[in-house]
Image (cartoon, rainbow, N blue to C red; front, side, top):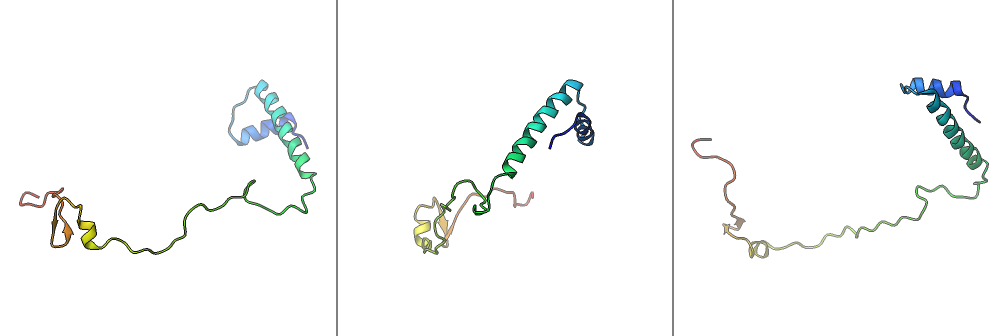
Length: 100
């Protein structure tokens, strides 16, 4: 299969590409080269090849999703700069006084 110059111009028009005559000739050669490669690939006998999503085997490298115990409240608060009633005490970052 190969594309004619008029077909390349038609595709360019559909894609709203303004091509010069030299660009049309250049793209015609490039597109025909691509179509030639596709024809070559289509001639391959791939009946015994299993479909794959990747060219190389891909293995999930994430760890198992296992529930592990977290820090106790006392352990979490050990390095807190300040705590009050078993909770982190942080500086107020928003207004909230009488002028809010």
